[in-house]
Image 1 (cartoon, one colour):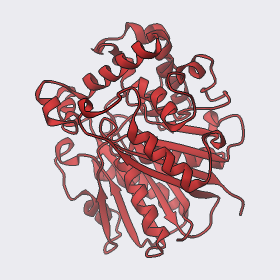
Image 2 (cartoon, helix red, strand yellow; image 1 turned 180 degrees about the vertical axis):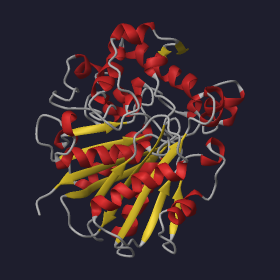
Image 3 (spheres, one colour; image 1 turned 135 degrees about the horizontal axis):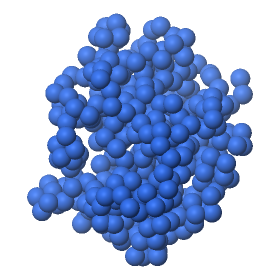
Image 4 (cartoon, helix red, strand yellow; image 1 turned 90 degrees about the vertical axis):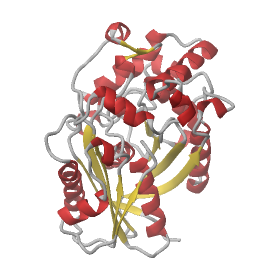
Length: 378
């Protein structure tokens, strides 16, 4: 098996965009292509969750390759709900590592602003169990059940949970690609509209448009793919043994660390899927950074901020950078590369990083991906 490296990265601005989904994805891809210095690719892998319902477009991978002028390069779409971007990257890794392909352009994106909030909620809820959906449960409602169970079990107060949103909005202020550039307070979070008790508006990620892109290659570069892991869980929340821990994350993280030959304490910083604020805390525990029920304590202590000893979501996370569902997993990896290269600008973490970890959640954690990147010497 060959080692796999990252040659180039690119991202579009997240938020409400007037351009089409294909144009936004091409924007990110063009930046990654320019960053890589490559003109030719053996394949193009595309991650997208549901362009059929969000924008009325199918066959999206062919449309993007056509728009970019890359025909007749083979192209494949990968879909694992909201972890589609990370899953496309995951599949591309295997293709390069096998030696069958030498270079792959990975693109992921989603355009969600064309539909109303109620329609978007319906589309997003289609990834959860049909029986739970039949009884009126939505993605925010299920996330609220997880949140309440965690708060009750581990005595987490909402004022402490609110610090996830406060931190990530502060980080996003320094990210020119972020959906939100607005500093908020704990009081803002606590006084925002109830979405699904105990979750409030500022506990939930926005509906965003955006795309990200990465060029993978067997050619040695400064950024190496060190570890990867992929896990699943029952779709129905009611079928799981625990709802305060995400088994798909623990399985994926264990695999990623085993492949990398590393432990959680080796990681310099992490981008963790925070579509809902408690998921940042739960994810940090399931990966092994903190003990169960203790992930919120470093947050309160300020340790997970950009200037802390273990930064989480320096990009602003899904909460503030934005969450175009198909793109988010790949956007995490783009941010990780920028941080490892020392190219993150004002949000560059304090200590020089060597290892970065990303965790992307598909659906309500039924299909999760964990990736570990390393900065190496040339």
